[in-house]
Image 1 (tube, rainbow, N blue to C red):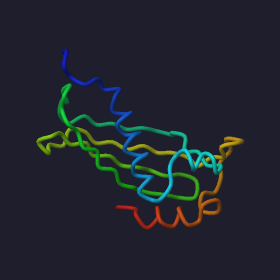
Image 2: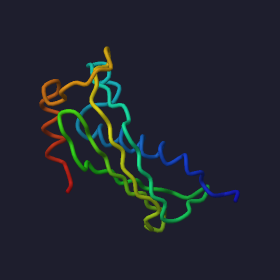
Image 3: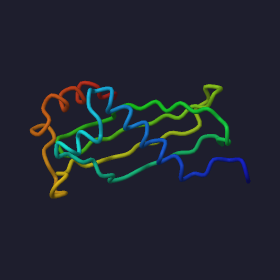
Image 4: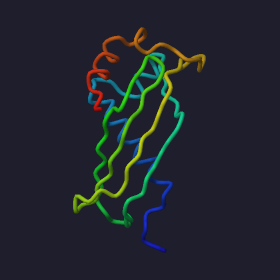
Length: 123
């Protein structure tokens, strides 16, 4: 049906929300990558609750569900302009070196950021 936002767009909503979330901790994705850390996607889960239409205004609330020295999981709640929950999802990412793409210990590479993120986990 025309007018309904395609399901594939939610991954982009999650990505932008995640980038914004990380910036709340005093850094950017670009800076993390320049400093040697990447967060490649391991898995993405997306649950559709209600249709979203072109022109709808959406709000994505992002929380940190869990973090370890090897992985991080973000949770997303998407609301429309009427404050109705339209989508739930999460993404899990690994911590890898920007140079080698091998797993790294984020707690050792970025102890201050890791501590701040750990303290923000919502159970």
